[in-house]
Length: 279
Length: 230
Image (cartoon, rainbow over all chains, first blue to last red):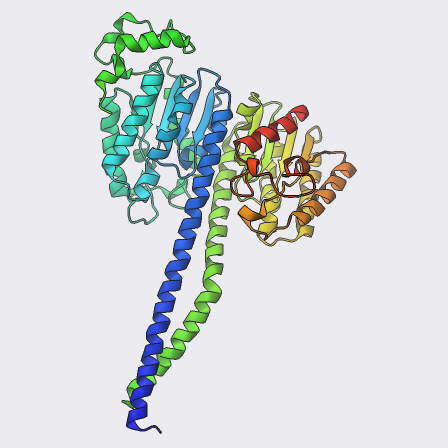
């Protein structure tokens, strides 16, 4: 049909077109995905901005029991779940340790009775290094303890997952949980293992989730049952700065959590908390 | 040589078809993925609400992300207030979990939803039909409950885009107001008070950071407007 020469030319044209189309496809695929990721990132940035600012407008009541963290915290109506009017929710969808650190002052400012923390999943998912996660975590705890030394701090483990993700996999989660447990011991606070009760066949028990990550009503019931005793605990379990026995002279039951700032300052000065802590 | 040309030309056709298919279907598939995520979230939250104990004299804030986005009981310092907002919920989704809301025979319900219907291409008529059904079900399942219908809020085009027009939102608000009056339900207009300037129909820039949702200042204004109904 064609001569050798024109056949050769046609092959070049056709092969060139193939190459071009493949490049277009790859480019478009990447562009769409980047756009989707960017718009989702932007969405959650704005969401964080709105929520964090909203929290600042809310009145401090005193003796609060704060649930602070990411969407695992945000998505549950803890006050109703635990049937306790003192419980408030300070969870923000997709928040990470740096995000919580940036807004922890709003939480410690009211000198809450207890703070239940769960954060770090988003850090893992976005490839933040474990040492940075722990550094942020350490600062979060320190800031609460400095601002509000009588607040009981509870550190939740991360939950297992059953969704396949590159970075946020159960191996990394378990590794981080181990470190969180050590962190809790280091600060003499309570570590709450909710990994084990939710684990089945080495991953998240699918009875409690419909996406391999987040919990349904049944899941939150189980979580609630696991931590309820700690909500009832009359006194805080451990005090960071009193670890060396300095608290012996202080009757913690006598002090109302809403003591005047003056006293608080003096209190802090005598114990000089920051000396014990590596920031 | 000839065979090589044939293979390459066939590959040309396949790739051209794939490229067309990609541009046609891929954006849709992203949208589909979002819808699936929203549906899964709805399912989880609805199942969580089911497990919560009923209280006496509840005041329920019912709706989608606008309702979910504020800690109402803290704002109003009223522990009877419960949040039943689920981000992404459409009127049909609210209908779907309405049983949990009316089961406790609440004292009051503040209802605000509908924007997600419009952004998902659901017609104005079925939005309004769902609203009518929500209201008649509330009055049937819990006759003592006082219902407050909160209008749709304006959006801000420069931040959100113009997929949903403020003029359409105003038309729907007009119909909701009519419906509320007919059923003896209180209608609360939040559209006009949150506009940037009278008649400009854009959500005030001080009240939003994405053209749709409310910032802390937006919620503070919202609260002030709601206060007398609580």
